[in-house]
Image (cartoon, rainbow, N blue to C red; front, side, top):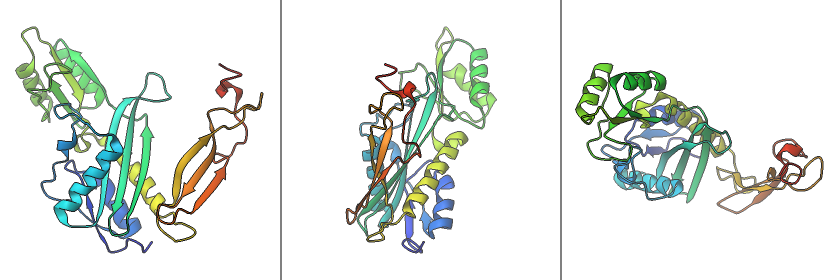
Length: 280
């Protein structure tokens, strides 16, 4: 694809996300990817809680991109934002939602993609002993996956993040625990300390590349993709609309050309188990 070929693109990260993003963008789009020195995206919020995240993920993506553009003068930026918590459809499972944005100031376009995955080691636990710390470390994949130690889950001072080995982890546990041995451990969700998350970021980046390669049939602007999902797929038993997707709307953000695709997942009726009338 020649739309971006040869252009410089700045990746807004301080956590080495370019390792998952840059190879795809360079190989498939012909971009020349750079990372700005000293860009502190942590001012927009941290997973460990000492800096509160005040904006929604899309606003945060835009702010990251703009920070990178302002820092370098390059008009094309890419940013990623991750969120972790309960999976929206799988009970008792955690989820990693990765959003990724390309912001092109030169052409006035933004292209966003999303990857939602249940593959994550996101977790945290209260500790009462060193044995519990070791057990937690083994469960979450330490030392290849990082651990953050705190005095308590909602205590955001005296946080210890740099725990590279079991010796360091144990030493820092004894440093941060209270007199009764209590402390709190949580997975370090920063990308460079979480290979599992880095893999999900790479999947989001691939989806972004695929969307960029989708051109508007009218004006050939990249990023022609789904902008709205319309529910209402009929139940195969009662025929009434369900919450399942009936239509996808594709829209070009440049010329506003629109295309509606019915039954985007290949089925025209929904199983009654997903019907609020047949299975309330």
